[in-house]
Length: 353
Ligand code: MRU
Image 1 (cartoon, helix red, strand yellow):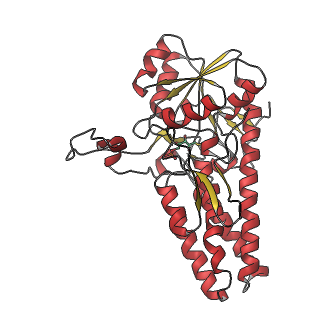
Image 2 (cartoon, rainbow, N blue to C red; image 1 turned 180 degrees about the vertical axis):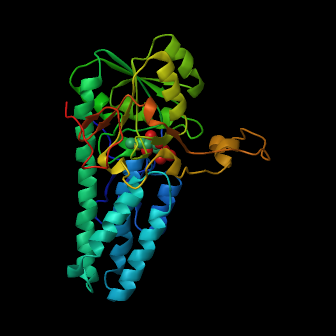
């Protein structure tokens, strides 16, 4: 099974090669990000998106943007590094993976052994960004392996947004167990909620699963309740942008509705996420900043007028699902069942399957 690679180094190593997700599913386009403007614009406009992917792209993008400046004197390079890191870190507020990755890069750069040497600092940052990339790939695979234990055979799985290969550096989070199950001969059919307003489910999840040969059917978001009532969903499996210490989950708008419906219909609701998505600094969902996006995403969906242009629009990109609605977390460290009140990784208690 061939799964795409959403983020990697460009062939010359000087840029970050992404799949431009704005153009999918009609057009497959790869783009190299080389400047801080390229990186910030790609993340802000969702050319690269998905919590783990923006963390990886942010860290690698910092390196790409700094590369032409390794010859600067040390104070100028340090100022540039701080400025670029702050700009990239601020592009999207909800997914914790982005500040997590940028802060990790800044900690690496602050090693006293590198002080006063931009070239060595840059080399160390490149190694750190590559480690973040490789670790993300490994975490996706581990999530896939652990998640297999929760899938019946056959399995009919509802997912939301895109928590697949396009959203990570590897085989995805929520979609990882599904890829591995299909690879191992299990019968899996996926129902992909379209995910208004930017349609990550129908544009991206249906595209990446379809090209990998996984059985997938697109639903509009408003169909979920009746499809559940008809008994056509065995389990729900979604990703996350930030998970608070108490287990509250920020994920794509619409996730909370699915969790409520799943509880009503007695369907398990699983959240798959790598360690980098668990935020030890956020006690509960109330403390998570929800990104509010431009009204034109609703008023002019994909270039067509879809609401009166003067209409007031409410467009939060994410919602909070209370921990009480989560059946279990699937992480790279194992399956975590309630109660979720525990300390942050690595101290969180998880049971390997
Ligand atoms: O606005 P997006 O497309 O970046 O939102 C992405 C999501 O909400 C995903 O479900 C989440 O990042 C998990 S990705 C593995």
